[in-house]
Structures are given as C-alpha cells and as structure tokens.
Image 1 (cartoon, rainbow, N blue to C red):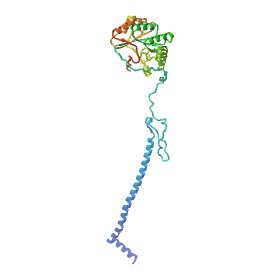
Image 2: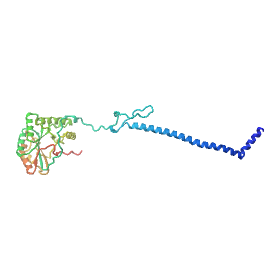
Image 3: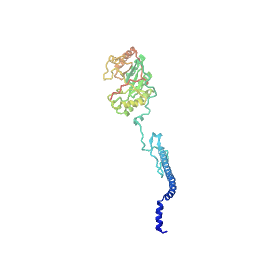
Length: 341
C-alpha cells in the first residue's frame, strides 16, 4: 500500500468513534496519575514551608527570651541593651552584668550638704506633741543668763513654779555657773543664739547651724545637759529670715529639736523697758482667752523692771486657775503660722 493511501486511511480512522474510545481509554489513567501526584507534591511543599516557618518562630522566641533576660527587675525596671549575639544574629543568653551607665534612673531628691555638718548636733529621743494641757502658762526668759538670773530664780522658787530660759553666748565662767543654777533648780534651758546677730545667723542654713552649735556646746559643757528645745532670735518668722526660715525649721526638726514662739509678751523688748505694773498688765492681757499661754520676757542686766513685775504675773495666772510649768520637748509648741505666699 502506498504511503499516500496509508495517510488517507489514518485521517479517516481518527474520525471514527472507535478510534476516539481507544484514545479516551489511554487518557484516563494518565489523568488519575496526575490527580494523585499534584496534591501530593503540594502537600510536601506546604509541609516544608510550615517547617521553615516553625523554625523561624522558634528562633524569634529564643531571641526574645534572651532579650527579656536583660531586663533587670531588681534594678528598678531599667531596660538593658541585649548583649551582642553570635554569628547567627541571635541575642546572647542573659548574663549578670552591672547596670548600664546610661540607664535611666530617678536619683531622688538631692540631699543638702549641710545635713552632714555637726553630726553630734541631734536632740535626744523624745516624743512629739504628747503634752497638751489646758489652763497652763509657760514663763520664758530670753537672752540670759545675767545678773538678773539669780533674782528670777529666787522668785520662781518662792512661788514654787518652773520656767524656761533660752540663753545666749556669754562664754564666761560666771555665765556657766548661772546656767548650771538654772538646771539645778529644775528649770528648762534651751538654745537661743550665740551671737544673736540676725544678719549673720540668718545668712544661710550653714550659718545658723554654726551659731546654734556653739551655744549648744556651751550649755552642754556648763550644765551636763544637752538642750533639746530652742527659740529663734526674733521668733521663727522675722524680717531677717524670710528667705530661709522654712529650710532652717525643716533641718532643725529633722535633727529632733523643738522650737517655741510665744502668744503673750510683757513688752520688755525695747531699749527702755516700761515700769513693772505696765509689764505685768501686758503679760496678763486677755487673761483666760487662751488655754495655753507662752509668755515672752527677757533676762538681762537692764531688765530690772521685768524682775519686779514677775510676782504680779505669777499671781495673776495662778489666781486665774493656771498652772505654771517649764517647757519640754514633748509639749505641743506654740509657733507662728507660715504666711501665705
């Protein structure tokens, strides 16, 4: 058969139905094979991708854990930079290291340098504000001791009452003897000032502490008693200490000392003190208006009228039902109120 005839027959066979059947029988097995192989290949590829993803997540978790190890909770929650990692780029394992120099910390309030001055200058232990009696009068004498001191002590002894002396300077043997007499008689002695020079002692907290310490040591050496109370020269708030009084008060309170202002005065703080009857009337002014009274008076050579007025003052308060006592650190103090800014 010629080649031409064979080609013609072949084209005819392809059009015949039996030929198409044979072709389909050959195609179906191939399709089935593909239906199995393609999903299998996809599943294998997906599993490989998932494995790679899991590996990456594991690496990230290890890196995060290593970085978290550098958060030093005991160092106030300061974040530390992770240590350099290895060749794989992961963070190094946490190590015990000193906090980084550039860590952000709250240094807290700055402690004033004057708190380190005079480490011996602390009041002994005592309670605060535990004595708050009614109908009580505290007679106080500033600026002593002086030649008037023995006279004042004699009058107080005669009436059986106690008082408080805020003393100044006078580092002499005679002054030391008078200081000792005050303490031996059962009265309270406290610091007033050494120089009593306002501009000098209120120049700074350091200046105040220096002045206070000098008088404190004189009293302690003369009497054997370390004073625990004091009175500011001019009162806790005056024309010279407005810029600094709160800071001084805070420091002296921190050291345990108690200060006392006053709510009555006999009016003898003048160059030429009034006569004794006037001083007594001043001290007894508004008698009964206050249940607790702290009377300001002065003990110096020029205050003879103060001594002369003292019996009438004592009798006036006693007749009004007041007891007369000495101040102690436990007494609730009478102090000036801070003015509003």
